[in-house]
Image (tube, rainbow, N blue to C red; front, side, top):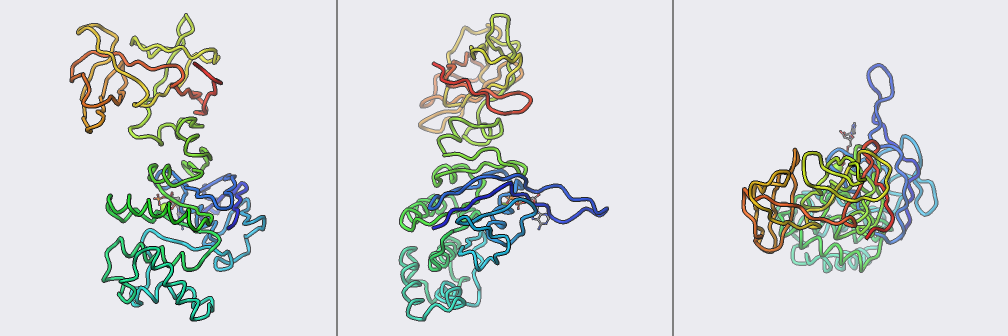
Length: 365
Ligand SMILES: Nc1ncnc2c1ncn2[C@@H]1O[C@H](COP(=O)(O)OP(=O)(O)OP(=O)(O)O)[C@@H](O)[C@H]1O
Ligand SMILES: [Mg+2]
C-alpha cells in the first residue's frame, strides 16, 4: 500500500510556435490520496484526468509541482520503479499471446520465479473467473473477458497502487454494473491504493472513498462521495454530480430580504448572506410540487412528465428557466398544469455569482 501526495502539480504540453509557454493542461493540483483508499478522478472529457493519472504513473513528466509516493519524490523514478499497475480502457493485451502469457508476461520481465508466476496467474485468474480461457488468445474473447484479463494481469503484479483509466467504458451497461461491483469487492479484498479515472459520476460515487472533481485542468473539490453530493464546493460540482442535474438559477434579493426568481412567485429565505444576487440550486429529488388553480400567473407550467416506474421526472417552466422535479410514482400532474415548486431552506445550495464558490450558511432549519 502507498500514500500518494500531489503538491501544486501542473502540466503543460509543449510550447506554442512563437516559443511562448502553452496553456496549462492541468494546474495547481494539491491533494493526498491516503494509503489503501480508492480515489476517483471525475470530470468531463478533456479536463485532465488521464494527464494526471499518467503523471502519477510516470508516463508523463510533471511540469510544475511535485508528486510524492510514501513521502518520496518520484520525479526521477521510471514508471516500472514506482510499483504501480495500470489498467487501460482498451485493455492493452498482447494479441499474439495467450491469456496465461498476457498475465504472466510482466512477472517474467520482473524475474519472478516460475512456480511463483504459476501461483499468481492461477490465483488472479480464479478471482476474475477466467480460468477456463487461460489458453485462449484475446481475439477469441468478449470485451468483458478481455477487461477481466487486464484486471487479472494487474492483480498478479501485486502492486502497491492500481491505476485505472476508464476501465469499464467499453463494456455494455449490464456488464459495466456487474464489473463495477466486482471491482469494489476486489478492492476490499486487496486493499491496495487505487486511483480510478472516470467521467461517470455513478462509478465514482459507488466505488470511491474520496472523489477528486476536476474541470478544465483544475481541482474543483476533493471530498467523500457524501460531501461531493451534499456540500458541493462549487457550482460546477453541484451541476456535474447528481442525476437529473441540480436546478440552478440566479435569484435576486427582495425588499423583505428574501430571494426570488424574477417574474415568478418562487421566493426563498436564505438568511443573511449579504449579496443582492445569488446562484441558488436545489436537486430535482429535494422538492415537491403543488398544483395551483389554472390560469394563475407567476407559477410554473408543466411541460412534460417522464415516468420511470418508481419515480417520474417533471419538466417545468418557471419564469425564463426550466426546472426538473422528481416526483414519486407516476406523479399527479400533467402537461399544461400550473404548479408551485416547494423546497426548504435546508435543501438549498447557494453559490457566489462571481466566484461560483459555495456560500456556507452554517446549519439551517
Ligand atoms: N500528449 C499530449 N499533447 C498535447 N496535448 C495533450 C496531450 N495529451 C492530452 N492533451 C490535451 O490535454 C487536455 C486534457 O487531456 P486528458 O486526456 O488528460 O483529458 P481527460 O480528462 O482524460 O479526457 P477524456 O475523458 O476525454 O479521456 C486535452 O485538451 C488534450 O487535448
Ligand atoms: Mg482520459
